[in-house]
Image (tube, rainbow, N blue to C red; front, side):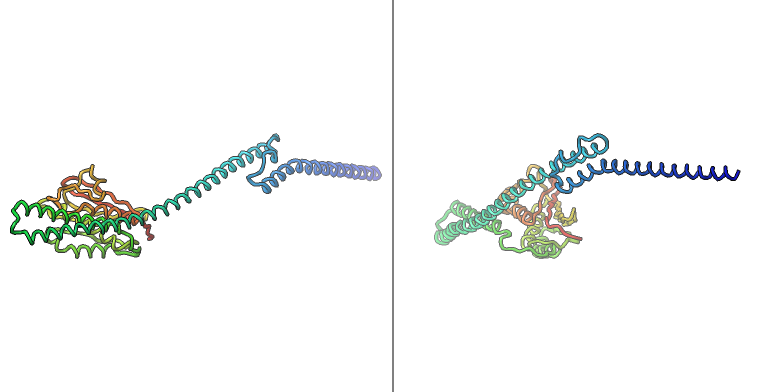
Length: 342
């Protein structure tokens, strides 16, 4: 019995050794197959990675396993489509960059031409205005001499005629002076921090007698400090306030309210009055040079004040516009294009 038991144990050991051997063979085969399959799968992926790393957006479709079946082929086709789309967008971007450079070059040339033309125009305006004033002064001088020397010999009609001549030459002189001032706007001024509160206070002080004569009121508060041209901004507020005082309704005391608010980083000002108002079809016309909406017998002036305002605002990269209703007043809005922080 003991002999049979030892035989059974030996048989069991031999059987286990065979099983272990078979398992080792199977594991070895599985490992070899796994390595082979892994290489079959990884090799195209590595090749695709290397191609993408080497060529980037210039990777060709034939360098990718786009014709393979299964997930690898699907992945390669997705990469190929993505590369083509990115390449197309890059071509468009490069084309846009080239076009933009061409446009920027043309813009610089046009700006240079415009600057030269503006300089020539300012010089022409100055020379023309100066030369035009000489004959007017001559006419006025001769009218004065004629009146002094022949006053007793002139009848009433002749005196009226001479009065018309004198008034016309004075009006022409004022127009020429206005044209000269218009051409000079911004020519010699520099940009600096400007307190609009102080500018408006100074303008109101200068116009104090006129404000008192018409019983008017100018209200303002919390006006900002801006980057701008102080002389031009002073003229801007002066023209708008003066217009509010001048174009008032009968028996209605002028009231002008000036305010400012920050909109998208830009200061927007409003100058509101309770005057006679402006018709809608004249909203753009009022900003043209020498445009008058009323006869000189009703309101004095050369019709250049709002043209000055428009040019001053544009010098500050801003816009000016108005809202108005006849017999209810007007609101002039303007922006100063310099963006501010805080």
